[in-house]
Image (spheres, rainbow, N blue to C red):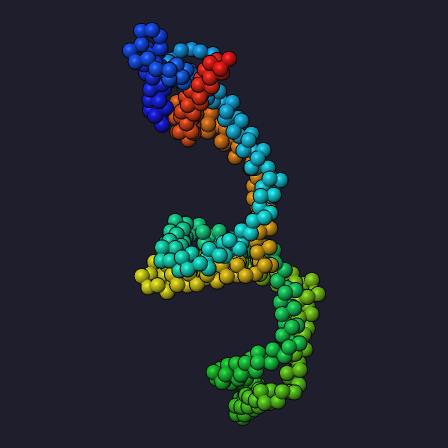
Length: 407
């Protein structure tokens, strides 16, 4: 465009000299149109030169001459940077402007429409890219450090949690819903199996505690059999009879435990102490590290598996998320409100830093870089100004010549 504008200016200069040679008594081809051509070309040349000077003066000194108020952009680079920063801050990064621009945008619905579109999620590139990105993130993180951080976070949250009232509420709710009955049945059966596996131990204990007379007469063996048979009979009755008194005692014990967990400071202190002992146990840390490493390596293997199962699961999950975003107005309202608050908060908290970054970046550019980037962005339109100036100047010259002839 610069060559076109300059060529047009040269053409007007040549036309001017040609028309000038044909005006007057020494003209080789006299014609009444030549004065009009002379007026047009003369004014066009002046207009083209004036606009060439104006456009050139924005970016550099015309012909290298130190003319005042030329090379405007290089000489005022820092002021332009400050002006750009102020313009960006006042028109884009104020909380009021950000909130106003986001108020009419449904970000959640737009994201949902994209995720539910056939090319949004089902495309293999999106699935593969999402899976590979997640795998790389998992690989780039330090397994031991991340596992320790996650465990530390869980430990801190569990440390803040009052476990005793929670357990009391769970036991009380289980008793109210009769969900404790299978537990009692399992406990009774476990007691019976344990007694069966340890009959000889029970007999040995009775034999040691019996006096010499019982052992001499052999009654200790009969006593052991009677005790074991009595316990078996009692356990069988508890299993068969849902109204057995022992069941009532167990239920009373559970109710008392629930009450103590909720209201007894001593019981609560014991539970909290036991909780902190378990959380501080190194065995728990080792167990969690192993669990976390197995989860991490397993997930990486599935993400990079050539089988499309994981990719299909990712795509299905994203599509389901998109459908919820698209069809749930309440969810849209919550997400849009969160997005507005987040972006407004960013503008309010970091707006000055963002515009300062723009300003300092432009200031660090040298004058040649600033000139080349701005001229590259708007230079084509500026060359149109030169072309228009040349043509408009010529028309003005013809108009003035017509006025001079008519008057």
